[in-house]
Amino acid sequence: MWVNERDLSSAERMGITIVEAPAVITTHLHEVLRKNAHRLLDRQEVKKLVDKVQEEAPALIDELMPDLLSLGQIQKVLKRLLRER
Image (cartoon, rainbow, N blue to C red; front, top):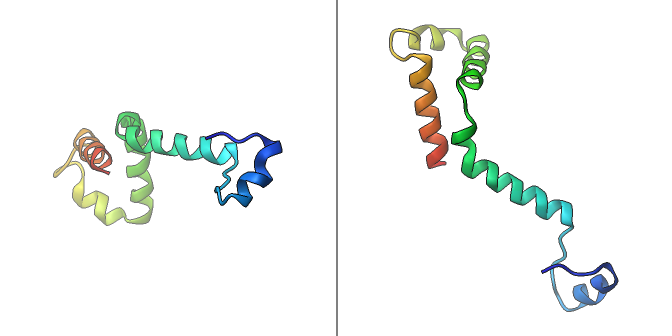
């Protein structure tokens, strides 16, 4: 419920938790992104992730790609994991 600024102090005295509007919007956007992250993960983003892992753990990527998994297969796995949260 939205509370006018002039009513904030009385709402707090009644024990109502007051949350700033930006925090509410941020929380809502965060949830929307979490629920839809699998739709937002495209091949280019997967390539960036693989490149970053290559910098940190080159042996892992060398062993994994391209013999075991292609970039497209990695994308599918990541999308499924995101969908499952």
